[in-house]
Image 1 (cartoon, rainbow, N blue to C red):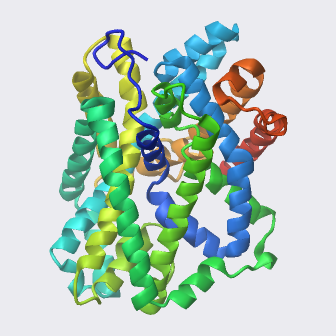
Image 2: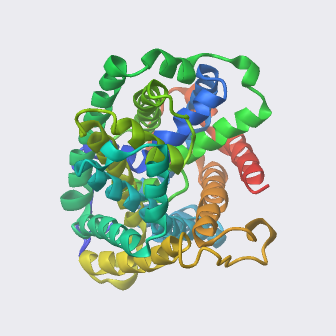
Length: 458
């Protein structure tokens, strides 16, 4: 990996902790903080969590290891890293599609993700202004609907959020990405801990814990298992391109297997802590533990308005903002890194060009909530016929590109790369661990991802 300015000085992480914080920031996103806890509570509690953890450790960790190893061995942006690996291993040139998917996927994802992230910024400002004090069920619902119907306000928040993320990427690895990871992720953990303590002291912690962790194995069936499997793959950022890119900056002395385990487990821990912080509040105020944006932007503000101090709402939406911000930064980096290598222009120039292009696509996504809400761009495609622009972008990324790229990464690492090349990156000495990794990456993970891909498009 060349420097941001195109000379021969390599760009590497300054420390293992900076690398881990950045990777965890890439994995911990908005979906982790509301979707996983809700899915766990509705589908068997700790029984679901146990199945999820098994999938994380047995399937996701091997793929994280593979993606980081490919990035470090390729020493470049996703497209050029794949070209380097193809040349070194004398593999088919068709495998370069992994690199292109690792550019296309995050670019599309940024556009619609930034729109939702803009909502977190809007609600953070509302919390700071004490707006939640006036909220009840009707007022909260109407307030959220007014935001969605206001393209000007949504455009402002989308622009501010994506502009801040672009500024960070323009500053490079150490002055931007690392700086944000070292600042934002500790703040995220502190805010999460404070909210957990608040749930223990002032909310219905018993009912919240029962919702999340009461084991109900009667709810575990094939459908729930597939749900846990899909959530596991999507929650650790496999196939998005961020880990492949971050791996390119990884020095030889940092253990990939240990890092992969830490990333996966901390990502899961954050999701569980979010559930412990959120659902006791929901039950304490007699609210519905609904999933999706409704829980975050309609239900919880009602609870926050009941507190004499508005600090809880401020902390929560600051938490959501930080999670979204670190994820978007990680998604911008693969695109910008490739564009620098492709054009030879400086990082600031390519960062802002990339940011503007993603902003334009995001404008189309946000208009689908108001002015273009009756526009169905792919109405001639059966599975997308009833989806607006935002929903099409979300479906293509979440249901097609991410699982497809994860599948290709597993197949390439398991079959196209030589065993010796991969083990050289891992430095694994336990032959049983080596055998399991090879079995998982060649057989278990591809089959599992293929099942997720099939079920998610039906």
